[in-house]
Amino acid sequence: MKTEEIRKKTEDQISSEMENLYKESLNLRFQKSSGQLENTSRINKVRKLIARMKTVLNERSEGK
Image (cartoon, rainbow, N blue to C red):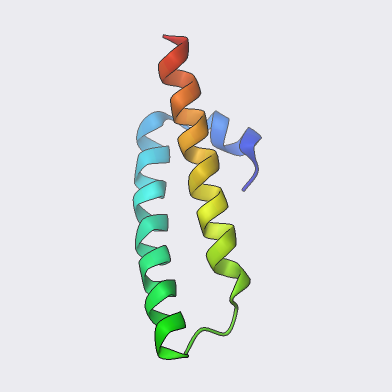
């Protein structure tokens, strides 16, 4: 998901999607520790997506 797509969403949508990404991140870490993770690059992609969402939320809160 690109930053432009994130900016189009409401704060509630971003928050709920971030919650899902945190859960996915937790599951990916468990899979990695147990040796079941096949796509290791997904961990970094999820972390960067969470950071993008946090950045957009911070920009909105500072702009108020």
